[in-house]
Image (tube, rainbow, N blue to C red; front, side, top):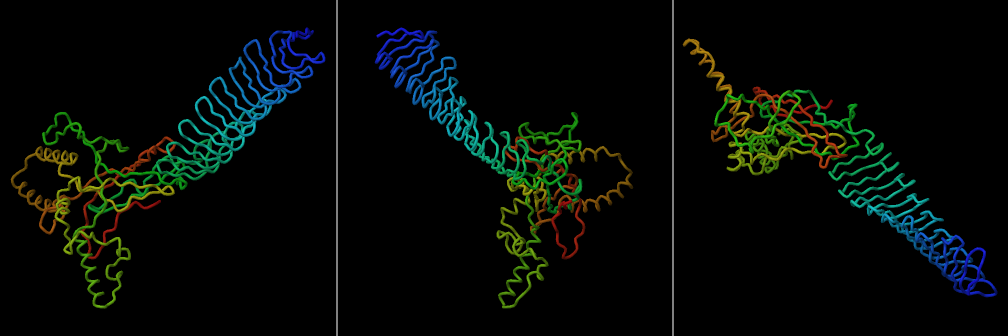
Length: 502
């Protein structure tokens, strides 16, 4: 039955001259239409509002108001909501599908996301936790599309308060946040193994390491064939040690000066394929360097034999029932374990045939990998290392030898008497040179090579990978000057040379 009205047109059920039952109503502006249930002249029950632009609501109504569960679609934005309503507004629990692909499922407060819910944004990131006025606010967790995961406090859509961030690369931060950045006290375990525990300001350490510093004098003298120690500190721009840092990976290198040959200098013995040439290392000393191997220090064979003999004497005395002070016998409080000779050496101080052959030949296969240390509390020490014996085909030294030969050929001729005098002096000098360049001999009489005298470059490099906070510390340099051995006194011990701390 059609009932005309000043406010519009109704077609449907009527009871006691009031709309009742199912009916359709068109509003005077013809933009809105309603079809559904009526009761006592009011929309009541299940119904559907239709709008001219394509928007609609379908669901429950109570006494003329949208109330209860329903579906709402906004044609202007393309958003669609399914859930609870109150007084015509989105209120309670529901699911909102946004046109850009964002999806929210959770609680609403009169149109705004509020309470607990889960939000999946258009990038695929998922947030689960508390909301207030559409924004993340309170405690919640965010799953990033790249695999990162944050769990902690939020304020106005940003991480603020205490929180834990687990990164996809394995890094972990736990501490204080502000405005979405590390701020305040916090600790990070970097995927490289490095740990920083301290204050943060806007995502960076309050005081961070900016340089590696090798302690001691700029030039360190080293007696030929002696071991040495290099101590390194991680410092900031003010020279303060970064004790909040642990685990930065440092590697020590050695190098010798690269000699640039003139175009007219050529010798077939020095020609090498391009792919076997050593890369050049830039130094702050005005020249490039070529890598030189470092090895762990191994005591002299003669010294090992002497130590072994002392230990055998102690064992003989102990076996006879006598007591002997080990410190008094050896003259050291640290040699009970650290000074124990290699078990592969026999009591005569000789190694296995393979060992002796490797020492004599100086083959690169016998050289261990370069020394690597992790810094602790902003400090690292490379202890008991030495320059490796040079290979017979080590190109930088081959060049030096060739240059020395050419220089000697160009020397002016001298009188016979001068040559006689000079030759006599050379005999004396050559004996001294042999003791320096050739070094000691094995018991079989084979000559062993020695470390060449002169200047070496020591380099300590930040090998932390990936670099902490995206930046590696610049390489630190130090000059090592190898000087000839001095006549040793009887009973004197050879201590490792090291750079003393400031």
